[in-house]
Length: 149
Image (cartoon, rainbow, N blue to C red; front, side, top):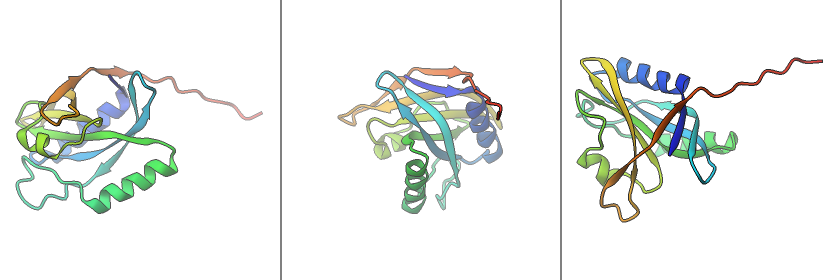
């Protein structure tokens, strides 16, 4: 199971809409408490793919290294990636299967005619044979404010 705040999901949907008709991509940062992953922040990355950007995305090694550095500084984990599927279902493609890693959550936004539609999350099986859909729970996280005394 993966939990994501409504504001973070809204931001991902906006990024997917802005990138249409190309795929957008980025990193999901958060924590895994053993029973669920919790998305606490995202890192927005440019799609580094030089061609076929309407159906492929690429996160370069340099971008990944920079994302790891941000995660370490914030004491968070990289728990997955997000990307969009312009005019395609929010299901992993064969290309996604070939390039995914087990454990990570892969959040996919279907964008139809420029409008974000379905959002799903997937986890690659340990034997890399297929993805299993992961329960995606959209929540409004409680934000605490403290007044200086």
